[in-house]
Length: 204
Image 1 (spheres, rainbow, N blue to C red):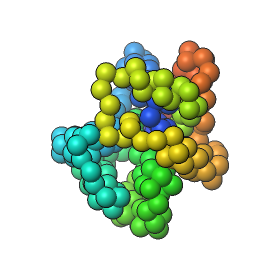
Image 2 (image 1 turned 135 degrees about the vertical axis):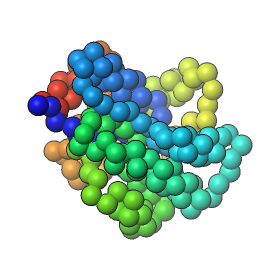
Image 3 (image 1 turned 90 degrees about the horizontal axis):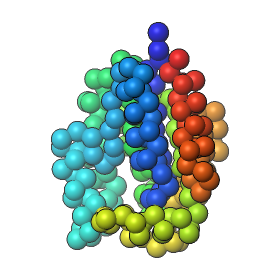
Image 4 (image 1 turned 90 degrees about the vertical axis):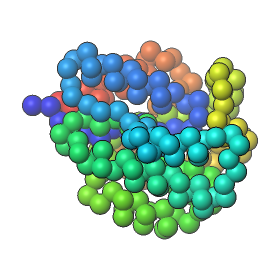
């Protein structure tokens, strides 16, 4: 009997997290594992509506509004997560650690407020494992240039992305057993293999 963990893929823009979650999805589908895949912001119908608002290049929210919009999007996803919690494997492209990395480490919002609101929303829902994808400055901006269109969060400066990535790494060091740092500057096929092998350990 397979396990049904929540597996999260984190990292700054251009770090490869969305690519790897697609690879894992294909692997699970091919091997007949039941799973759902969501993204944040996004996932549920209402959360996708909020996503468009947050990431719109014309949007210009203050940091508190940004935080509350992200949490509103998460709130809309919680029922979806609850529905399949421990019943299906749940893959999430960004989750609670993204809020801490971006809104606290990147934008300076009080971490106590973020933690309190996350606990209020999640209740007993717990992430089982997180893949943190890291990227250097050169590859970050090289990959962003290759995108057909850029959203609001694709257009911050180097200093901001550095603060966010360091924030992610701080979080990974606090919970080493449930984190795997993936250096996305290395060979992508080797990283895919590392991630798939770890996923197999988590679900079997």
